[in-house]
Image (cartoon, rainbow, N blue to C red; front, side, top):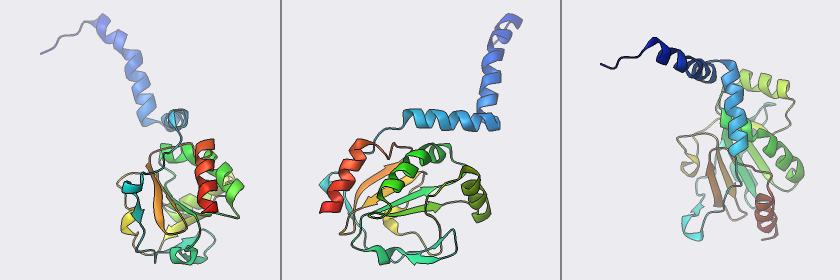
Length: 188
């Protein structure tokens, strides 16, 4: 058995305190968001061999305002689908860059921010943060191509229905690299 002196235990106390603070308090959530935002990088386009054709696009969603939509109605448009939740620090970290991106491309790109959370919680969160993102909730089973074990998960779909970018984890979505990709997809 490992023996620790009183002095050694006291030297570990600040680290134990910070670990508990970081992991188990609301302040820890904000610290996780900050670090996720700090480490977010531009997402990378998939190679031609790694791209997936979206075949099951009949996916019904409900907008936060109650309107029902179907992903298949957006065939022929560049589309971004993001899965997120209010309790997910990396999800919250990438919201500011998505806000800017969606604001710039709201008339040319279809955005779907699909909440994996309770609608009342999401509504309160959106209102508190004064967000304008188009938030949706799933009504039918998620298409196979969008299934991920982690969030945030984001997919960029070109006009032909091909997933050209797939990113799990926080990213800087308002980066120049992303805008160049989107501009190219819009011209194709």
